[in-house]
Image (cartoon, rainbow, N blue to C red; front, side):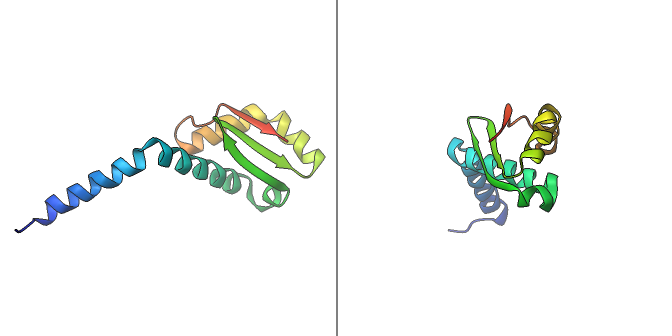
Length: 99
């Protein structure tokens, strides 16, 4: 039996798309994207003061070790949320909660 490369490529592409779009995989992938976007968005100065970061039910939870920084970020919460969703190219977050 002989298969053409285009048939195999298409089947593999379809299989990869199915895996990526499965709900559990997509959710984990999106959470990783959110956290990586947070880190790249703010850089090392905020990352050094970020003790814990996780996503749960479309909410980003961020524990900040510096009270002044936490206060500053809290005041800019809506703008940060908007910019993160824009950077992610889709609305993955509904809220940011600073701990």
